[in-house]
Image 1 (cartoon, rainbow, N blue to C red):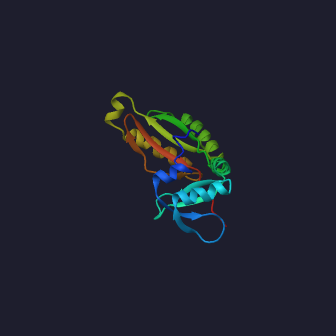
Image 2 (image 1 turned 45 degrees about the vertical axis):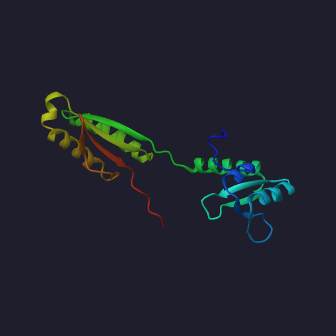
Image 3 (image 1 turned 180 degrees about the vertical axis):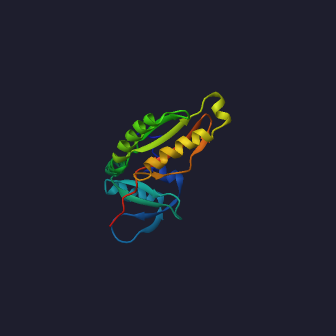
Length: 177
Protein backbone atom coordinates (compact mmCIF):
# COMPACT_ATOMS: atom_id res chain seq x y z
CA UNK A 1 0.00 0.00 0.00
CA UNK A 2 1.50 3.34 -0.98
CA UNK A 3 1.91 6.24 1.43
CA UNK A 4 -0.67 8.29 -0.52
CA UNK A 5 -3.42 5.74 0.12
CA UNK A 6 -2.53 5.43 3.82
CA UNK A 7 -4.14 8.38 5.64
CA UNK A 8 -2.81 7.49 9.11
CA UNK A 9 -0.61 10.24 10.52
CA UNK A 10 2.49 9.15 12.45
CA UNK A 11 5.32 10.79 14.40
CA UNK A 12 6.30 14.25 13.00
CA UNK A 13 3.17 14.43 10.81
CA UNK A 14 1.10 14.73 14.00
CA UNK A 15 3.04 17.82 15.12
CA UNK A 16 2.13 19.51 11.79
CA UNK A 17 -1.52 18.42 12.22
CA UNK A 18 -2.17 19.52 15.82
CA UNK A 19 -0.32 21.01 18.79
CA UNK A 20 -2.12 19.00 21.53
CA UNK A 21 -3.19 15.34 21.63
CA UNK A 22 -4.91 12.95 24.02
CA UNK A 23 -2.09 10.46 24.56
CA UNK A 24 -2.81 6.77 25.11
CA UNK A 25 0.44 5.05 26.05
CA UNK A 26 -0.83 1.83 27.63
CA UNK A 27 0.21 3.02 31.11
CA UNK A 28 -2.69 4.47 33.08
CA UNK A 29 -5.35 6.91 31.91
CA UNK A 30 -5.14 8.88 28.65
CA UNK A 31 -3.78 12.38 29.23
CA UNK A 32 -3.72 15.57 27.19
CA UNK A 33 -0.17 16.65 26.30
CA UNK A 34 1.66 18.71 23.69
CA UNK A 35 2.28 16.84 20.43
CA UNK A 36 6.06 17.27 20.79
CA UNK A 37 6.00 15.86 24.33
CA UNK A 38 3.91 12.88 23.13
CA UNK A 39 6.40 12.24 20.31
CA UNK A 40 9.27 12.38 22.81
CA UNK A 41 7.51 9.81 25.04
CA UNK A 42 7.05 7.48 22.06
CA UNK A 43 10.68 7.80 20.95
CA UNK A 44 11.92 7.12 24.51
CA UNK A 45 10.00 3.82 24.43
CA UNK A 46 11.37 3.00 20.97
CA UNK A 47 7.88 3.10 19.41
CA UNK A 48 5.86 5.32 17.08
CA UNK A 49 3.20 7.91 17.82
CA UNK A 50 0.11 7.09 15.71
CA UNK A 51 -2.96 9.30 15.32
CA UNK A 52 -5.89 6.89 15.81
CA UNK A 53 -8.81 9.37 16.09
CA UNK A 54 -8.02 12.59 14.19
CA UNK A 55 -11.59 13.95 14.44
CA UNK A 56 -11.77 13.80 18.26
CA UNK A 57 -11.27 16.96 20.30
CA UNK A 58 -8.34 16.88 21.01
CA UNK A 59 -7.18 14.22 18.51
CA UNK A 60 -6.25 10.85 20.05
CA UNK A 61 -2.70 9.57 19.53
CA UNK A 62 -1.43 6.19 20.65
CA UNK A 63 2.10 4.97 21.37
CA UNK A 64 2.58 1.72 19.42
CA UNK A 65 4.69 -0.17 16.92
CA UNK A 66 3.39 1.23 13.61
CA UNK A 67 4.67 -1.69 11.50
CA UNK A 68 2.83 -4.17 13.71
CA UNK A 69 -0.30 -1.96 13.62
CA UNK A 70 -0.28 -1.89 9.78
CA UNK A 71 0.22 -5.65 9.66
CA UNK A 72 -2.78 -6.20 11.95
CA UNK A 73 -4.92 -3.85 9.82
CA UNK A 74 -4.01 -5.74 6.63
CA UNK A 75 -4.75 -9.09 8.30
CA UNK A 76 -8.18 -7.88 9.42
CA UNK A 77 -8.95 -6.69 5.87
CA UNK A 78 -7.97 -10.06 4.42
CA UNK A 79 -10.12 -11.91 6.98
CA UNK A 80 -13.11 -9.70 6.17
CA UNK A 81 -12.57 -10.32 2.45
CA UNK A 82 -12.49 -14.09 2.99
CA UNK A 83 -15.84 -13.98 4.77
CA UNK A 84 -17.56 -12.04 1.97
CA UNK A 85 -20.11 -13.98 -0.01
CA UNK A 86 -19.79 -13.73 -3.77
CA UNK A 87 -23.19 -13.83 -5.42
CA UNK A 88 -23.22 -15.39 -8.85
CA UNK A 89 -26.04 -14.34 -11.19
CA UNK A 90 -26.96 -16.67 -14.03
CA UNK A 91 -28.93 -15.25 -16.93
CA UNK A 92 -31.54 -17.18 -18.87
CA UNK A 93 -32.94 -15.61 -22.05
CA UNK A 94 -36.30 -16.22 -23.66
CA UNK A 95 -38.14 -14.72 -26.61
CA UNK A 96 -41.81 -13.82 -26.66
CA UNK A 97 -42.47 -16.56 -29.27
CA UNK A 98 -40.74 -19.40 -27.40
CA UNK A 99 -42.28 -22.88 -27.48
CA UNK A 100 -43.36 -24.72 -24.32
CA UNK A 101 -40.72 -27.48 -24.61
CA UNK A 102 -37.98 -24.82 -24.78
CA UNK A 103 -39.43 -23.10 -21.71
CA UNK A 104 -39.44 -26.43 -19.84
CA UNK A 105 -35.78 -27.03 -20.76
CA UNK A 106 -34.68 -23.57 -19.60
CA UNK A 107 -36.75 -23.78 -16.42
CA UNK A 108 -34.98 -27.06 -15.59
CA UNK A 109 -31.63 -25.24 -15.78
CA UNK A 110 -32.95 -22.34 -13.71
CA UNK A 111 -34.02 -24.82 -10.99
CA UNK A 112 -30.51 -26.33 -10.97
CA UNK A 113 -28.93 -22.88 -10.58
CA UNK A 114 -31.30 -21.98 -7.74
CA UNK A 115 -30.57 -25.25 -5.94
CA UNK A 116 -26.86 -24.41 -6.09
CA UNK A 117 -27.63 -21.06 -4.41
CA UNK A 118 -27.14 -18.89 -7.47
CA UNK A 119 -29.35 -15.95 -8.39
CA UNK A 120 -31.12 -16.19 -11.75
CA UNK A 121 -32.00 -13.31 -14.04
CA UNK A 122 -34.82 -14.14 -16.42
CA UNK A 123 -34.84 -12.02 -19.58
CA UNK A 124 -37.36 -11.93 -22.41
CA UNK A 125 -35.89 -10.33 -25.52
CA UNK A 126 -38.33 -8.31 -27.63
CA UNK A 127 -37.45 -7.82 -31.31
CA UNK A 128 -38.78 -5.26 -33.75
CA UNK A 129 -42.59 -5.12 -33.66
CA UNK A 130 -42.69 -7.16 -30.45
CA UNK A 131 -41.73 -3.94 -28.64
CA UNK A 132 -45.10 -2.47 -29.61
CA UNK A 133 -46.87 -5.28 -27.71
CA UNK A 134 -44.72 -6.27 -24.74
CA UNK A 135 -47.69 -8.09 -23.15
CA UNK A 136 -46.57 -11.33 -24.86
CA UNK A 137 -43.17 -11.02 -23.18
CA UNK A 138 -44.80 -10.42 -19.79
CA UNK A 139 -46.96 -13.53 -20.36
CA UNK A 140 -43.82 -15.61 -20.99
CA UNK A 141 -41.97 -14.28 -17.94
CA UNK A 142 -45.04 -14.78 -15.71
CA UNK A 143 -45.45 -18.35 -17.02
CA UNK A 144 -41.81 -19.07 -16.17
CA UNK A 145 -42.23 -17.48 -12.73
CA UNK A 146 -45.26 -19.70 -12.05
CA UNK A 147 -43.10 -22.75 -12.82
CA UNK A 148 -40.31 -21.58 -10.46
CA UNK A 149 -42.17 -19.95 -7.55
CA UNK A 150 -41.94 -23.11 -5.42
CA UNK A 151 -38.10 -22.95 -5.38
CA UNK A 152 -37.44 -19.20 -5.66
CA UNK A 153 -38.23 -15.74 -4.36
CA UNK A 154 -39.00 -12.79 -6.61
CA UNK A 155 -36.73 -9.79 -5.95
CA UNK A 156 -38.88 -7.35 -7.91
CA UNK A 157 -41.72 -7.29 -10.41
CA UNK A 158 -40.90 -7.95 -14.09
CA UNK A 159 -40.18 -4.68 -15.85
CA UNK A 160 -39.43 -3.50 -19.35
CA UNK A 161 -35.90 -2.14 -19.74
CA UNK A 162 -34.99 -1.30 -23.32
CA UNK A 163 -35.56 -4.40 -25.49
CA UNK A 164 -35.74 -6.73 -22.47
CA UNK A 165 -38.24 -7.65 -19.80
CA UNK A 166 -36.19 -8.56 -16.71
CA UNK A 167 -36.98 -10.46 -13.54
CA UNK A 168 -34.43 -11.36 -10.84
CA UNK A 169 -35.16 -14.41 -8.72
CA UNK A 170 -33.16 -15.83 -5.84
CA UNK A 171 -33.10 -19.03 -3.81
CA UNK A 172 -35.38 -18.83 -0.75
CA UNK A 173 -33.69 -17.53 2.39
CA UNK A 174 -32.95 -20.21 4.94
CA UNK A 175 -34.79 -19.67 8.21
CA UNK A 176 -32.56 -19.58 11.29
CA UNK A 177 -33.69 -21.78 14.15
